[in-house]
Structure formats: structure tokens, C-alpha cells
Image 1 (cartoon, rainbow, N blue to C red):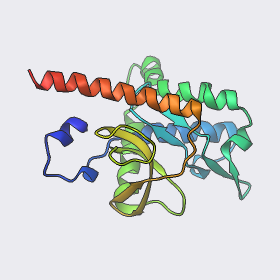
Image 2 (cartoon, rainbow, N blue to C red; image 1 turned 45 degrees about the vertical axis):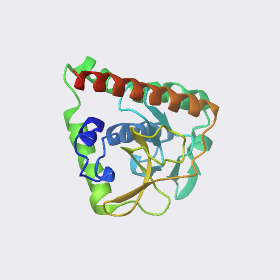
Image 3 (cartoon, rainbow, N blue to C red; image 1 turned 135 degrees about the vertical axis):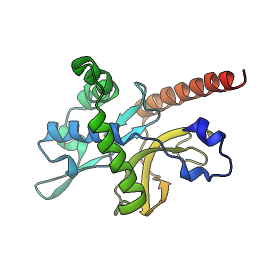
Image 4 (cartoon, rainbow, N blue to C red; image 1 turned 120 degrees about the vertical axis):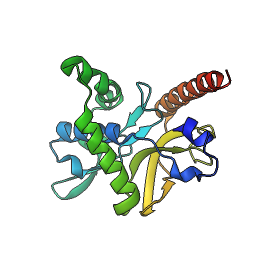
Length: 199
């Protein structure tokens, strides 16, 4: 996505997005199974960074509707070791696990996620304080991520086609380390891509 953006300077930066909605859907489903709720009742789980094994699925700022009551995910799950450990690694490695098990990629899940991505961005938007996760241009973001990357953030889409990076999510020391790790990978990938294109 970033290479495409760099080679299409006449197209506005905000028109370039990349897919982390598949990871976002997987993360919501894992939380829903753990809590015994519908995935549609799980909100503001965040996918930070790259669509790779360094991505950081973050449920610490999320919430769910359970028995018609809004509750914070950490309060309901009440297992920080799982939220920081198995939950994160499961989402990070889910694509590989599917391929290992089926010898095929999760094509239908990816297709569904593409539909979700486009619908949320271009048709329905987001409501209230709800966010979605998409990879977007990082310039001017409120989380200290290096400018010049396509990076997955929590987004508000207040009007179809117009998104903004949602501010105000708490980033503790653990989350910051995870975000810096995925940022570093994206910078490495950018350097490799640019070196190839210069040949």
C-alpha cells in the first residue's frame, strides 16, 4: 500500500488504506468466545501496526455489551495474562495456523473482511465512540508512530469516506513496546522495498 502511495502522488493520502479488518474481526471473535457474547457486541479492540506477526491486537481499551450493560473488556475477562499473552499470539499467528491446518488460506474470511472494511469506510461509518481498525497514512497521528508509514490505528469514520485516527486511547509501557516493535518492522520493510526499487 505504501509503495503504491509513493508512486501515485496525485492521489490524496487518505485514499490509501490497507486491510487489518481481518485481524480486527478475529480479535473480536476471540474476546466474544472468552466472554460468552456475540462478536457484534465487542467494540474498540484495536489492531496496531503491520498486518504481520508483529501486529499488536489490543483489547485493554475495549468494551462489550453484556446483558445490556456496557463493560470494559479487562473487567469482564479478568485475566490480564491471557489478554497480554495467548490472545495476542493467537491473533498474530491465526493466518499461519489456518494455512497449516487447511493447507489453504482463509480466503472467505479475508473476503468478508474486505467487505467490512469498505462498508465501514465508505458506506456506514462508525457511530458514537466506536472505532474500527485499518492501516492508514501515519502522518500527524497522536500516538508517536513515525510519519511516512501505512500503519493500523483505531479510526472513527464520522461520515462515509472520511476517517480520522481516534485519539485518547491509553498506551501503557507494554503496549508501547509492542507498537514500537511493529513500527520497527514496517520501517525495515520500507527500507528493503526502497532498496529494490532503486536498482
